[in-house]
Length: 176
Image (cartoon, rainbow, N blue to C red; front, side, top):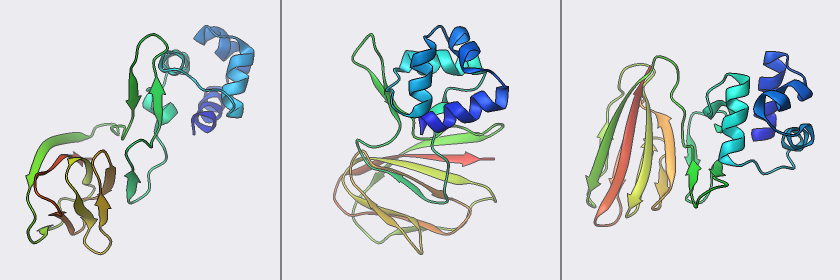
């Protein structure tokens, strides 16, 4: 994923491999390995490249979006620091001119909470922090475990159903 994004952004800017490596302060061979998908870039390396390419960091690590996207705990585009014990997993990059609302959800087992469609273009993002839940589009919900992430259109009917006591989630609604 990073290799494809690097090639795409370098082509967009018209920079040579040599020039991008120089601007990012790295060896040309390192950049070549990253573009070939054989390198394992650190957080600092990706920041240097995003700065040199003049693109947001997320453009290098955010996977292309589909209508429904699930990221299971331990999966997703993670980058680690080379200096400290720190890993960040980008779950979703904010589109330009978007507004986001963030909620902490507490739910107990019961009937599903059915939500009517929100305004056109609304997208919901959920990270389950504890318990188990069934959620997403009413016609095709997914079951999440702690640490799992899902995104789906909020402008269509959708549901949230706690499957175990003490279910907690972080819900972000994105309005474009």
